[in-house]
Image (cartoon, rainbow, N blue to C red; front, top):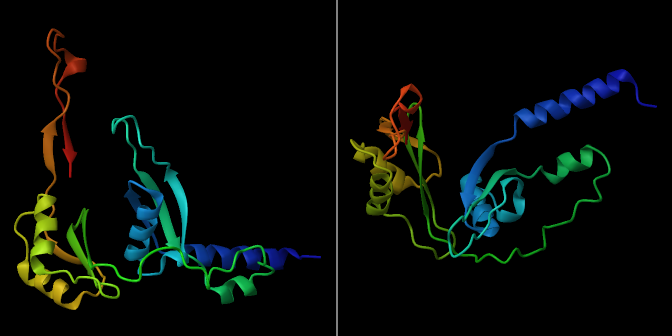
Length: 199
């Protein structure tokens, strides 16, 4: 029989484990691409990624109405933790299973815009993959509309390729008018143009 104290301790331990989970949100045209992107961002193998589907992707009709796969991904728990938690024999053993991804992959450049600035992460190549060069990192930053880039930090990130985010610029959101009156519709208080910030 399980006592109340044992149940409380079990719940306390599970809550602590949940707080320590590192997760990322990723979007990609296919589930496989989203899983591979999540694995790169988490810095683990694809077989070590567990995920929740936020939005199921669709191809649409002739490209219209296409929706990407959106996942919340996190690293799978270690086998030692699972064994300590009880009988987890229903989980498949994926250690010897090849997931179908190549052993070589190029290095990656990731740009994130957060409230406290623009951050850059450069990951090293896998196997015989091509490493990231400074021009690739700058191109990714310029594609997101980033100005006043600290090139010294970009150079260091490309040289070290540690896979951690570093702040490379200030982030100033661009505001554009979204709600303009359509032709023939009188502009009133409900049709007033508003500025919405976008990144």
